[in-house]
Image (cartoon, rainbow, N blue to C red; front, top):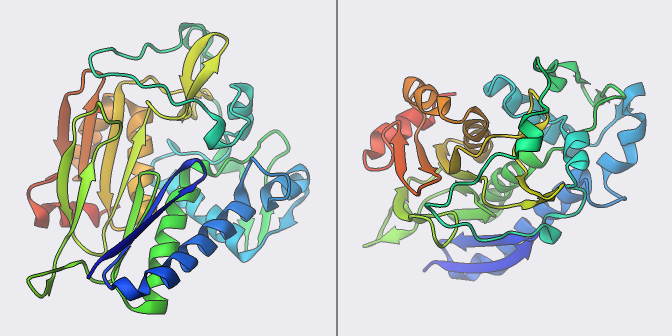
Length: 327
């Protein structure tokens, strides 16, 4: 019999589901430990994190922990996968926009479909004439030695939550052998078998919906696959009197134009799903053709609440699997 637990993490909801009820308590311990380890390694919002302690001297090259190295490797993989649309060197830009506090302290106002979010005019008008040199290409990771130029500041928030979901699901399954689904604020990873239906393991039933006012859709997610949703409606705050959001266009270090309310992607790993969904927000309307040509299973919700899908999402399960395995 399935069992589930929920608790707050990083100001978001963590949700754990296991296929065997008696394993829930131990599974939760595993997930909490993984999340705590990731937070201690790369949080921008605590002074004792490895990122904040080593940040001032990274230009000289620093030796990082195995956890930080893994997070950095996955962040650089996401940058390569998305041609730089996901860039781990936007920390200074986020600080300049006022995103200096933890996720829980950033207001999340309710925006309703049919009321388009307007790009911050005072920001877009002041965009540089030419895109910047991609920061991620200037990072050097040689074994456990990390070198980051002094003019760059890391922010691994775009990928660390997804990596945490992947790690947590894998570790629960490795330790306990049960099927598991881990969701960390919209980043969802699975491992092992799915829930049992009529005595046979089946697919995970997942509701895809960003905010309560948004259109929802329930899908069947095959075991071993992951989902991630990126949103321009959450983690919003006021900057110079204008609403801004946390997904930045790395070319300019400014919030991406909010063409999409949210984008959800299915992939083999939560990291890949998150990288694609974040990059889709950055690319705006051009993301549809990209996803269609690459066969990426995605669900787009525009500012009027209309939905569009690519890559066989969600009703052709075999095509979703085939598309999700690409990358």
